[in-house]
Image (cartoon, rainbow, N blue to C red):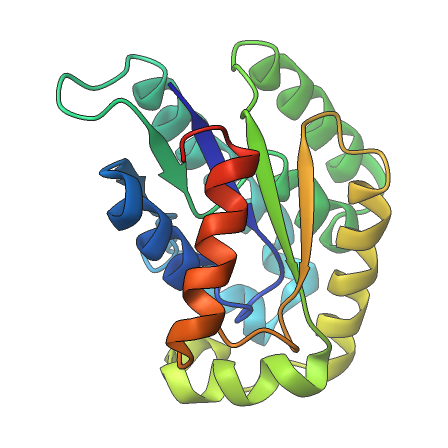
Length: 200
């Protein structure tokens, strides 16, 4: 039984790869719930004011979803998710400061102790120049005015966190592998990942 997580910055292709992987092995597919966060649109307009609200909502939402996953499934031996629980820490480290950041850290540590880690994390990397057209193409209204500099800082934060990732890790340069449009690229990547996850 394998628990695989696909992670990376906004617009990098996490959900697409998650769906391909889940379909390839008949796994339970777990997708991050983004649009339900009632503070997200306000955060993009005024990050300083809404950062703590948006991060706390995501933290609790992801914790509840991760707890449900820990109960397993009667119909699928494997699970593939398009987010890592620790992603919330990565975003919060950019968006929170002072007492709000200290309080968030206490909340995160208390909740993370109750969760099991994945068997394999697939980290998709890409530059902001690659991410911005993909973000525009998917057309989420609240992402319309996303700052390229924010994407750059986010990519750096991801790289810094994954240097010390406590889980088995495989890094993919997503700007050189087109697993969405290219069937050969996709098949090659899926074979590689399923071997790493020992479900091939």
